[in-house]
Image (tube, rainbow, N blue to C red; front, side, top):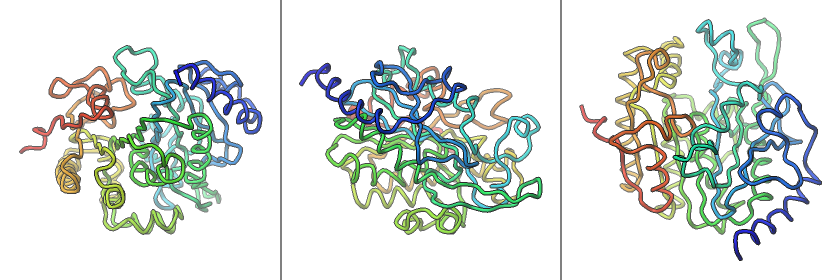
Amino acid sequence: MDYKERRNLRLQHLGDFVENSIGKTIVDFDLIAPELPEDPEDNTWYRVIMPKGKSGDGSEYHVYVKLGDPEKLCVFFSGGGVAYNEYTAARPITGGKMAADLPNYYWDNLRPFTQIMNIDMGIMNLKDNDNPFRDWSIIDIAYATGDFHIGNNDFPYEGEDKEQHVLHFHGYQNFIEAMGVSESLFPNPVKLLIAGNSAGAFAVPALTDEILSVWYPHVKDVTVLSDSALLLYSKWEYTARNVWKAPKEICDAIKSDNITLSWYRNLFAKYGDSIRYLYSSSTRDYVLTAYYNDITNKTYKTDSDVQDAYYEQLKEMVKELKRLTPSFGMYINNWVVPLITKGGTVHTAVREPYFTRLSQDDVTMARWLFDAVNGNVYDVGMKLLLD
């Protein structure tokens, strides 16, 4: 079956899905990505509204899809902060708080402005000839729930206005709905990349098993990537179980203050080296260090002390992932963007212009990731972890 025949078969599935599931149009989003039509064009971003989905503030939820080569699929988990208790739940991100440098922890809805960052950047960029993934099919699972895509709870909290509010930790339900879309649009991929940045990077090891066992059990060529997922917290298991009310098996896998490492250990115990594992981070991530400072010192700011602490934690993280399997591929960078990184280094790269524009050891992240999904897994930037 050639490419056109596979595309026509997929569009037959798609026609049924669009007829039964697509909801109302929101005009404000059309400039970013129009709603998915019955006969979509290849290599164009579309928005798919989830009738049962819900953002953190109770507003509508949607995902983004791009039809490319049906044999190559990227399931991407978007990031956007985290809420892990009542205090953080009461402080969602707003433009005003960001401008004033006040504590703001997570996006609680899919504002058109925030979604500009979700598509057409980094691995999502369709116009960048240096992006080797521009011809892939992609589903971008948007994030607006503050729960690493695994929550299943309506969480009451008192807001800064002293009024009672509810944060809808519906990340897991949104994920389930999104994967139904993925299965309908992309039923038969041969090569699968499951990736995420920031909060979405934590979701990758938590949800990969479900993706592979429920939706894509036939796919044998699988690569997973977590880009910037290191945040130590002694109460992660409590948060997942009691605040987010994530599925039991996801909570049970959390065995330490390093939630990402716990989930990768659990994933590797089941799949071993049958899938490819990748991890990336900058050496002194200015965003994750601010969260860590807030957790440990109740100060939501980055500084040299917490950046140094993160550097030591990253060295331990890489060592433990390599102990899990020596073939765990690493991409470590020390990129600085003046006035933005606040004395530290960048936060995430896979969905940033850095993806194709900056290099570490003369290798872009785009090249490293493309080589990995094609079977050539190697490390970049490991010398940065040597004192």
